Image (cartoon, rainbow, N blue to C red; front, side):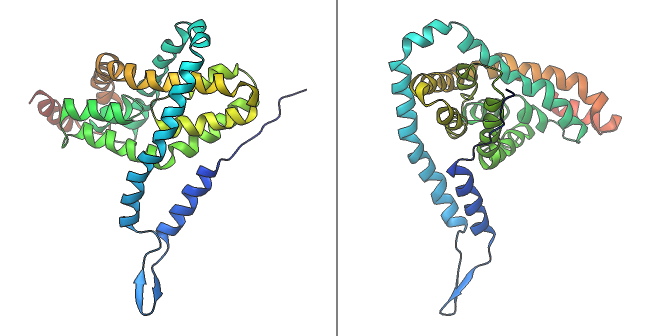
Length: 254
């Protein structure tokens, strides 16, 4: 029997769409005064509240990881080596960004998945006002807005194809973002409830490794590789004249 395609949508998707709709709605008038249903003030409060709500989830993942530590050790180096998959952003996204006309912003945009650890590394290395920092901040914001929706759909589709073991999908869900980790692991747990504890253990361990190992991967692998490829590909794929290329080179030397 061919695999059945199942797309599982989580409440997080509806909450984000509802919040976006309320944010875009015009203010309503009550007794002659205008009120925003969801304005900038509420958005800033929600950002801080999100961190508080994610805290119990991280603690639960940590407990699950310790409970299934024996199973995790049996997997061996696969849990660590799968983090090298994050380098895919360098090889696939960098040429596309250059073709779209971006300059040194591409180094921050494509050297990683642009979550909190990568954000700190890029800003510390290049400075907050640098093009590289603008690039990593742009992808950080976009990832926060649509990353959870995207990864939830992606996980649901791939799991339905039944081409890999559920443990592989659980490890892949740990990309260094608590919200994306939760969005990716939820469809997996729903479809394999008997494996819930082990799946959450792999997901939690993978996410923790992404936070820790991801910093060193960004410093010693992805950023130098992105710089190298940018220097080679920008004159070929970049939308710039020879004078602009020379100007970028002089800025980089300064």
